[in-house]
Image (cartoon, rainbow, N blue to C red; front, top):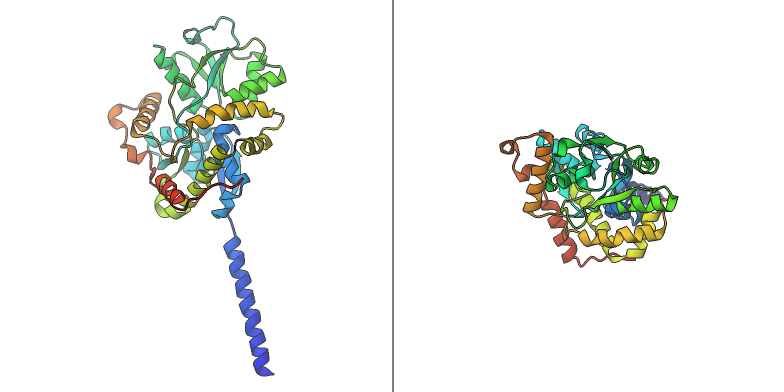
Length: 336
């Protein structure tokens, strides 16, 4: 009888240990990720949430919607874990911030400059005018600066008006409160659906003219050095999200539609088709594009060329490349 009781007690203890172990194994790390929008450019991250890729890698995601101008200080302070405003992070790195950009889903932008002022017909007409962006130093401002430089103009010859995340830029165009604003095609389609595009007109489309990486993943250098395995799990989830986005057009659009209430599927589909054409092979970008981005950012903040740090102090694509090779070796394919 005693032996039976002892065995029963041991069984209960063993079961309790197994339950505790299973609970620990299932516990997810809660992390905060900043995003400036819910457009197709953010599909790899949003899809990874929807398809459970982050959970598979041990994460529970909290999205914090904010532009790069506020996301980067939050990343530096440690109040956010990951930022998808990689380009804004580069400006901070050039100023000495201990951050790294480790993954880029796309290597081209699809922004458009739209004008409400009837006197603005060309890029040259923007001189002295205010242009609406999301936040200072974000990819929208950099895109405008590149366009102005290529048009032989001073990038500081216009004023940049931060309108924040959300519908503020759309309202500015619809109400013609600013002479011009930079928009994504999905924004334009939304304005058309709302009947608020008015007399606004596009004066410049960057898609075929400006090569620039977008929605890059930025992390703290300390986190990358201290626990690269944790960062690798996060990158695996994003890489899977990118692969699913490329493989399943309609399902990806369905996912994006849940984040863009009131927007027609056709609008998202139109953006999807040309965005996916800019997909990077493994989340890394070539050295030439790395240099271009760092140089532009240095010019933006007035940093002399000889003060720009080496590229490996700005970017670190080792994990992205490792993940790409591993997923290929595993013959991993996204399921519908």
